[in-house]
Image (tube, rainbow, N blue to C red):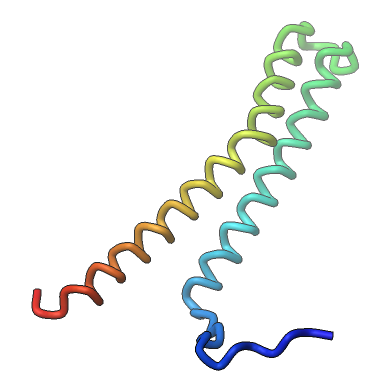
Length: 101
């Protein structure tokens, strides 16, 4: 069913610290999206006039903010996380290549 791992390829050993960081990023992205959904619901309620003390225009603003929060903020957070991991790997490769520095 699965191909055996070639002898010359090292086995993957997960780093517990990086796994913890990835889980934290995943959790925070989920919370941000969930809060965005809540903000979207409040914005829709305000825009449709179901919350009487507010005029409809703040509801439209909240809808735009919520959509931005649900779509673009998680992507930005994930890109920052990946960019940091790549930078750490590049630093580690440079340190391996120059042992006498």
